[in-house]
Image 1 (cartoon, rainbow, N blue to C red):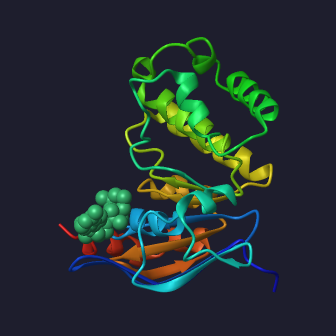
Image 2: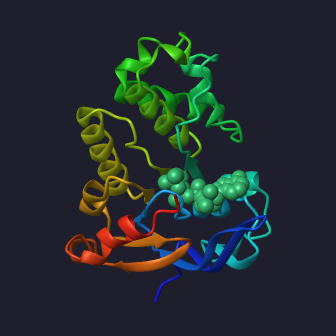
Length: 241
Ligand SMILES: Nc1ncnc2c1ncn2[C@@H]1O[C@H](COP(=O)(O)OP(=O)(O)OP(=O)(O)O)[C@@H](O)[C@H]1O
Ligand SMILES: [Mg+2]
């Protein structure tokens, strides 16, 4: 078997006395979309935060492209291509659209190539291009999500992790977003996708994992999981609140 792009082994994370992840094991091969599903509080965001290095695990190992990254600081991981589109998008609304985009490239020194990639992002998202010098607060939720995705692309991801990107978007933008996810993946990008929109996520993923109270409750082929009554149970029975 070839080396996985990402390998998370027996990862456990707590916040003080709250255990958020227990013994989670996950593998993403190059070129795959892996969906992580689960109810509120299941530990989905914590998984992404520990993979990027914003949260320190209690135990377990994370390997990226064959290298142990568990002890590496976040900027090193981002430099190697682990990029997060965070929950709630985290657009800085008092900065311009262009300044927000450039934040994605802050570790890069190849400024000419960054400029070219930015133009490609503007070509793809004309709504951002026409208002690039405006404050990001003028964007709709859907446009802010596109900005968050554009910013992540400027970080040159090998693995793009997306935390509930469809949350709060109109059906039109949800469809655009998932078209974009499929297109990036066809171009070779590997994606770790967290979603509460189970149907959409399972329709694009190659593999899916269901977290329930911090544990992997269920995993497998998306088409089969979509039919599994335990998927519904994980949502109904696994809610922390
Ligand atoms: N900074 C924190 N301090 C204390 N507890 C936290 C913190 N962040 C998350 N938790 C707790 O850890 C558990 C997992 O939270 P996490 O945010 O990872 O879940 P999630 O699956 O992303 O939920 P949601 O669907 O609501 O985004 C929950 O019980 C949550 O209350
Ligand atoms: Mg979350």
